Length: 274
Ligand code: NAD
View 1: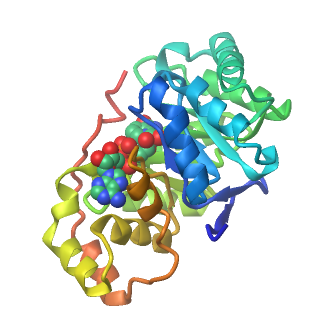
View 2: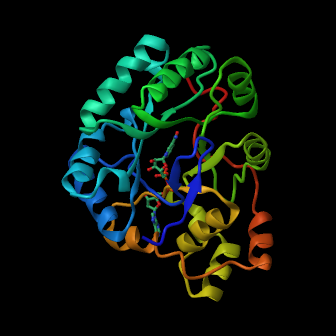
View 3: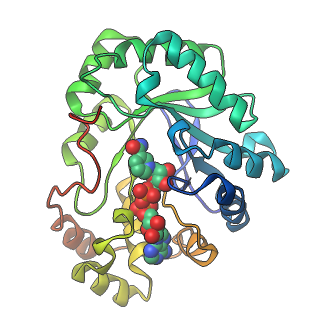
């Protein structure tokens, strides 16, 4: 496939573009993931709380593709944080996926009010040491959460998956990640399909390149060095979103997109999300 890889801090290689399956109902997930695999995606992002790990696993296992060509991410939900609960949640996820291992296991949210993410991380370290997750990381962690994790545990997260799009460019986090060897993964990379797709600056850049706004946004992520996991259930859009490796945004385009950073979140605030 034409998708480049990012080298994670433990030597694991992760496709820079993957397929997200949030909000795809279980009974439509197999079909959607199959369409993504047909289009050339090899990385799929799910989570226990999405309640579609079984549908995701069915498509992956049923594809007949060699396991080592696939990259599967899932996540431990907030209510399962804590050492023992996380080990159990991981076993349940593997079982639903029908896999022997995942490529990446993430703490879904820091949920700081619970004060369990450090303990939860030690469970992920165990799972990683056992080879049942090839890499471990976090999601929605802010700089103070990352500092504490790095200070109190032994494995630096390979990835932090955060809300990231032209309205929320996460400069401070991306700098922190770069200093500590943490890969930046963007969720909501298309602004969750909302008004950002009609943002005039992006529309102008898209027209100039003869591409869609979604493609321009994905190209922006790739050129920034982000991993992106756009979601769609529409086969033509699934294909469109991976057809981004034959054009390049120039410095002027990148500077114009940089101007759009308003700090506007489209999802929950990680400091208060329980
Ligand atoms: P997204 O930015 O990927 O937007 C998806 C929506 O954009 C689709 O539902 C569709 O309406 C629209 N869309 C997709 N392709 C399009 C195209 N080519 N043209 C026009 N519209 C298009 O948003 P998302 O689904 O929220 O995020 C992607 C993935 O990130 C999720 O599926 C999930 O795997 C992950 N995620 C993780 C977290 C987390 O807390 N870690 C939170 C949200 C999402």
